[in-house]
Length: 192
Image 1 (cartoon, rainbow, N blue to C red):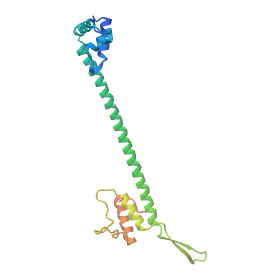
Image 2 (cartoon, rainbow, N blue to C red):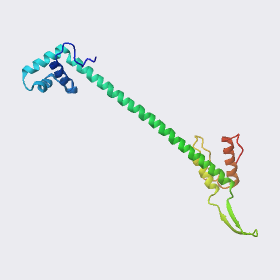
Image 3 (tube, rainbow, N blue to C red):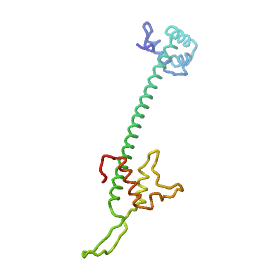
Image 4 (cartoon, rainbow, N blue to C red):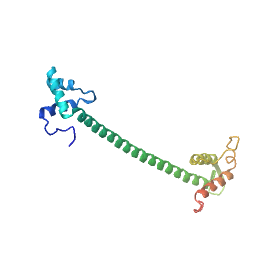
């Protein structure tokens, strides 16, 4: 039994008056409770004061407030825990999607390195008719590798002056560096 419930020996009228007092909240007063129970008049305030002393209304109302504050805090904490769990799940899901995107980009880079830089269209008799440039260059691979590399010690594809020339000008250097990166991450797998 909670202290704010009806006590042994407390009349129904006294308990109903206590509930009105209790439910007034932090600004409660015996005078305000008496006005709500009986209307205006000093005699009614004295009756409320008598019941309050006899049945310890102040402590009972405080216990009621404390109980509801505890429930409110528990509800807030429960909500915040569920939000934190949801946030953690969403972050993990987002990281997984980013990793999947990086893996797909790495596969595309591997395909690009196996294709020629140019596309030759030859006639049936073996003569070269047209040579078309491919839709990518080694600079494209350099940019893609820079996007993939989010490690603290990023692979430097620039020289000290800030120009992208360390690997960007010579296609064989880019291909060699890319192969080194792939082999470093997957030493047990044969190169593509």
